[in-house]
Structures are given as C-alpha cells and as structure tokens.
Image (cartoon, rainbow, N blue to C red; front, side, top):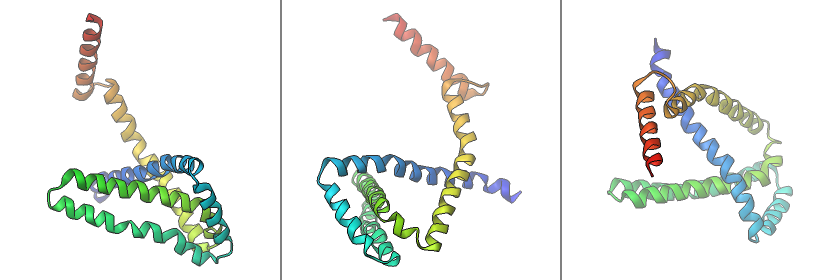
Length: 176
C-alpha cells in the first residue's frame, strides 16, 4: 500500500535525476567543443598536470569547489523568485545550473583517474551509475505512454484528442 502511494514520488525523483543525467550527457560534449574552440585546451592540460601531482583527496577539493562556488547564484535566484522577478530568477538559476554542470563535466574529465583511486568515491560513482539505470527503467514506461499519447496511439481521451488535432493540422496543411 505504502509502495503504491510513493510510486509517483519515485517516478518524479527518477525524472529529476534523469534530467540531471541528460544535462550532464549533453553539456559534456558542448564543454569539450568550447575547450577545443578557445584556449581552454591549454588550461585543461595545465589543470591535468597539476592534478597529476596531487593526492586524490586534494583532487576532490578541486572537483567540488567550483560547483559549490556557484551555489550563491542559485540562492540569489531563489531570492529573486521570492520577490517576484520570475524571468530573471529562472534565467539566473538555469545559467548557474548549466555553468555548474559544464564546469563539473570539465573537471570530472580531468580529475576522474585520481578520484577513482578513492574506494568510497568509486563506490559512490558505481552507485550513481546503477541508480541512473534504475531511474531509466522506472521512467521508461511513463515515457513510452506519453509518447503513445502524443502520437495519438491508444484509446484514452488524450490519445483521441491528439489524433483529432493531428487530423485537423493535416487538413489545414492540405488545404493550402
């Protein structure tokens, strides 16, 4: 009974987790292109050389500090949100999120070998990867159902409505 009541919460948390994972997956190549386009490649090489000489624990600090330093921007965004500056707040929070994920992806690429030397970090990394696979499995049926509805498959009212809209759009485009 409790499991059934908590199912929507788990699906919501899984969706949020997968959005984070999606951002990571899609920002990492963008960051790689930015690094290739501007002189960040030299900076990446410089950081990699410095990380190579550090202990894994010191490398963890290099990995975590930039993400933490963006936290005040998110707090400012929440303050703006609370005071009715919706657009500015959302833009600031999204900017902080994208920059944070981009910097984290960049630094994780550089620091990964050292971080993986720490047993607890490797265990946490493996746990997050496993959690991501479980979240994907949990959200996949919901995603498939949403896609079916959007395509107009199925017998529900939403699917029928989307089929009607699709037929209307098709008739409008054919009339031209």
